[in-house]
Length: 120
Image (cartoon, rainbow, N blue to C red; front, side):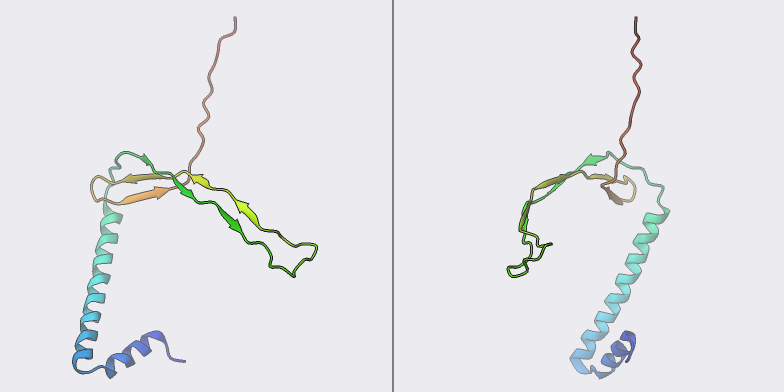
């Protein structure tokens, strides 16, 4: 079985005329895309990020009915249809003011603060 790269090379050899021109243009654009992606990754990796405001951007998943097991499979572990209610999920976003890199997270920690109340 031929490798994917070998098959692509073989298909390029078959293209002549206008199809060959289009294939060469595709190859040039693919190379340019690869270089641009590398430059963007380098920018994000080397930037000394200065994060802007952290924004809360919650999202919801709609409610739906899980279908359960089809009729005729009425064993002891048969599952009926079940409604799964709509849920709201927390999400936060921050953007670097220098390079524009945006990070999104759903992770959070709960900060517990201890308050001392005097007793008299």
